[in-house]
Length: 284
Image (cartoon, rainbow, N blue to C red; front, side, top):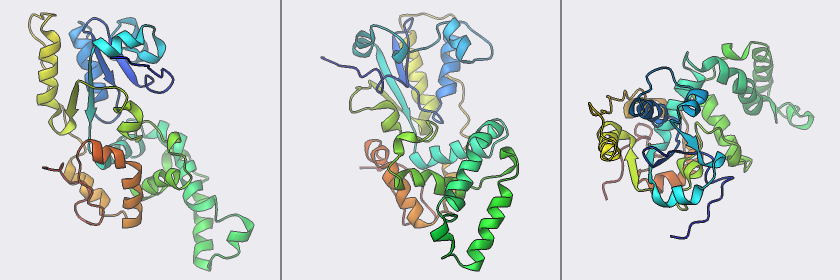
């Protein structure tokens, strides 16, 4: 196969491991950390993982920082983990904006931007502000007072988060989305890179074990490595619950943002359903 890799874009989120001759596009909020831990186990490393540790023990390197990229893309086993686009968005919000583990860093980074874009950016312009109702002007003052709080105390709601994410579509700036909610098709470019294995996040435990077994065939482990049960924190029911609060016009904008993910991975869009926005895959 003649493959011309665009290292600047196609390879940026693709990591590889030479020992197992495997290549994986990193999809945040779709088991990416779990798989990094698994490779650490396979390489006999048992400890806390971070970027420097992954490099030190050669657990993963990134194609964008390597040479001989074309050979690896052509010959290595390539896999990707995909997830329902809206469920992944709910997981990102819960972990990065509402969860205790990452809330501080992401809230500091994004919370005031979200309030500015959603409430203040357009409405505080002189010509626009004069047209606002008294109630709308009171809301502006409320948000301006809110902006005085530290980012970690702003408690961004899911509706505010979704409104902000869809603003990138309105401004034709989808390229600027954070990687934790960027569409999989944008991160991994599956129309350019032919992946050998697609792992469905709904069956990540079973399908990942099949891949682990395959990768170990020429690397006999004693005892063999098993893919431990992966906890599904943001379930499909939780996703549906979150989207009951989101108006249809915003759900339709999200569908446009994640359209290629819906199509490529066979998910049904139920944007007109108030109760079942995050349904199972098409059975066709």
